[in-house]
Image (cartoon, rainbow, N blue to C red; front, side):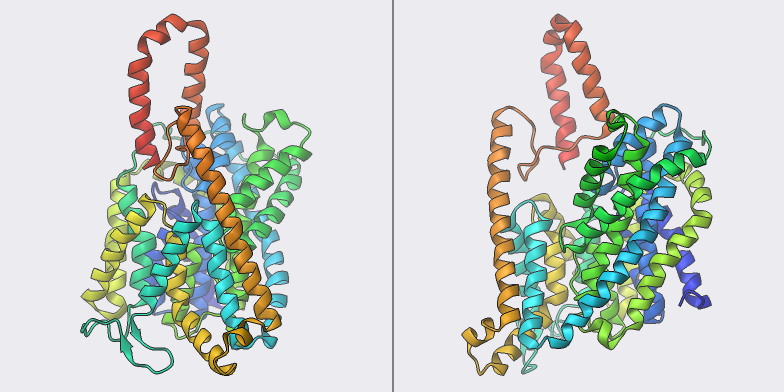
Length: 544
C-alpha cells in the first residue's frame, strides 16, 4: 500500500494539510477532518482512509506549535506542551522545544503503530464467535463507554446519546422498511444523511464556539531562533518517549477516554522516572517529549476500537466511519473480516504520515511559525465555507446544508451546556445497526429478552456497560460536589461546574500578581476590586 503512488500522494497531501491545520488558531482534529471529508468521496476507499489518517497524524504534530510559541494549547492534549514548551520558548530555546516536539511525535507515532497492529488483529478475530446479540452488546458497550468517559456529566452524556439514537430512527424501519418519524417530509423518507449531521454537530458547533473565544496571538515572534537539538538531547528523550507511546496507546484504546488521560499519565510517569523531576513544569525536555509522544500515540490507540470493533471513541474517528459509509462499507465489528484492505490502508496512513513528516516535518515547523499569527476570523470563515461546499457536493442537496447548519447550532448549545457531542455523533452513526441488531437478535431468540441477555458474551458486555454507567454516575456526583466546594470558596467555574482553564501565559501572570501581593499588600488591597472584576470577565471568556 505504501508503494502505491496514488496512496502515497494523498498521504503526503494529508500530512501537510494536517500539519498546517493543526497550527492554525481554532482548528481542531475533528474540524480539520470534517473540512476535508467531502474531498474523499471521489477517492478509492483505501486512499480515503489513508488520507484521513494522515491528516489526523499531521494535526497532532502541528497543534503543538502554537502551544509552544504562544502558551495556548489548541487541544486539551497539548496543555502540558503549553507549559514546558512555552517555558523553553521564552528562555530563547525555541529550536530545542520544537525539535523535541518533532522527534518525540514521530518516534511515538511509529512505536504506537506496532501496538495498533498487535492489538487490532487479535480483537477482530474474536468476532468470528459473535452473533447478532453479541454484536448488539458490543455497540452498547461502545456507546456507554463514550457516555461515561467522554463527558463530565454522565446524565447529560446519556441524554445526548438518546437524542442521537432518536435522530437515527428517522426514516425506514431496519426490519420492515416502513417509513417513520418523517412528518410528511419527502427529504426525510430515507432518513437523515449521516455526514451532514455529524459535521454539523462536531465541526460547525466548534466553529460557532470558536468565534466567541478570544486569544492574543501577537505575542508570537516573527522569526525562528534556535537550532535542532543535539544527539545528546535526543538520546535523553528515548525513555520518556517510550513511556508516552505506551501510555498514549493504552488510554487511546479505551473508547471515550481519549488521548488527554494518556498524556497526563505519561507526563506523571516520566517525572517519576526522571533524574531531574524539579524541571517538570519549568521547561523540561523530558516532560515535553513524554507529552508529545503520548499525544501522537493516542491516535493509533484510538483506531484500535474503530477498526477492531467498529466503535469510534472520538469525533475524528466518527467522521472516518462516516466516510466509510459513503463508500458503501458498513462500519462495525466485521469491518476487518470483510474488508481487510481498510486495515492495511489505516496502517499505511500511520506509518506513511510519520515517515513523510520525518522528512518534511522540520521545514514545516519553521514555516508554521508565521502561520500561527494568522487572524482566527480568516481561518474560521474559510473552514465554514469549505464545510458548506463539501456537504452540498455530497448529494448536491441544499437540504443537507440546512441540516448541517441546524445541527451545528444544536451542537453549539450542547457544548455550551455540557452535553457530549461525541456521544451524540457516535449514536447517529451506530443507530441503525444498534436497533437492527437488537430486533434481529430478539427474533433469533424467539422474542425472549431473558434468553437474549443471558447469552454468556452478551451478558458480560452488558454487565461491563452497566458498570461503566455506574462509574460515570459516581464520577459525576464527585465532580458536582467538588464544583460546589470550589464555588463556595469563590473560585470561578464554567457552566458545567468545572474550574475555568487558564493558559500557561495566564498562569505566569497570576504568579507575578501573587509575588507582588506578598511585598505590596497595601497597594494590592486598594486595587483588589478592579482586578477581580477584570479577572472575572477574562475567566468567563475563557470558560466560554
